[in-house]
Length: 303
Image 1: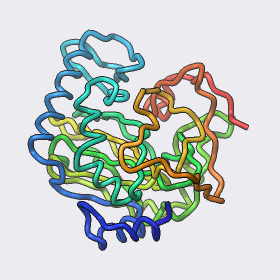
Image 2 (image 1 turned 180 degrees about the vertical axis):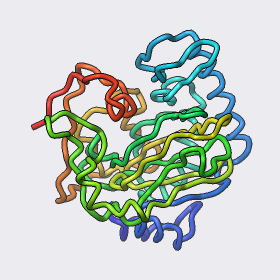
Image 3 (image 1 turned 90 degrees about the horizontal axis):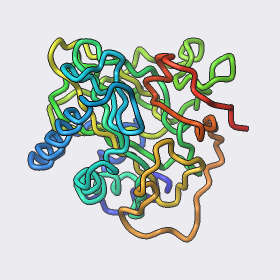
C-alpha cells in the first residue's frame, strides 16, 4: 500500500504524527512500547535458547554462533526464525502490540515475512555494516518493514541500531562486490554517497521498539560494553499486496502468513527496480558470516 492509502485508515497504537514521521524519515523509536509481561516471556525464551546453544560447537540452521562460542561461555549471534522455535514467539509476532504497530504502518491487510533474534554479545559482539534489507528478500513493492524489540536496556556503548533519516527515499545500492559475489553490505566507495554523519543511533530501555523501512540504510557498531549483551528480536512484515519475489533463506511455515485483514485481490507493483540476491538454495549462513568474510557462500548472481 502507498503511505496515502495507509494513512486513510485509523491507527490503533500510533498517532497520525508518528505515522507521518515514519513515512518521512523511514524509522521510529518507541520507548517502553512492549508490556512487561511480554518482555518477561521473551527474556525467558532467549535464556532458554542460549542454554540450548551450549551443546552446539558449530552453526546450524537454528543457531548462528560466534567463532569463540563454547559451552561455558556461549556467544550466540542469532537464533534463526524464532517463530518456528517456540509458539510464544509466533503469538507475539501475530497477536500482540507489534502486530497492531505493523497494521498502523502497512494498512489493514498485513502479512508476516520472517523473524530472527540477534544477540550482539558484550565485549565485542559483531558489527553489522551499513546495508538495506530489501535486496536480501525483494518484494513486488516497498511496503515492507522490520520491527525490533530491545530485550534489555541499550545505551550508546552496546551497538544500538543506527539509521540514516530519509535514506529510504534515496538510492537502492548494489550489495555485490567487484567479483560479482554477494557482500551483503554497501561498499566503501558507494558509502561516499551516503550521509553517514547524519546517522541516528536508536537506544532505549528494555521493551523499546525500533521500526525501519525495508529501504532504510542501517547498521550497528560492535558491542563495547564489558558485561551486557544487546538481544534484539526482529520481526518483518509487509502489506499483503507486497508479495515476496524470492524465497526466504530460512523457511518457516509462517512465512507469508496473513496476520491481519484479508488477502487483497490485486498485487501492487512498484515501478522502482530492486536488486536480486544470489541463489542461496545451496546453503546460507547469516549476514554476519557474509559481512565478516568468514566463508565463501555457494552463490551465483541472480539474473
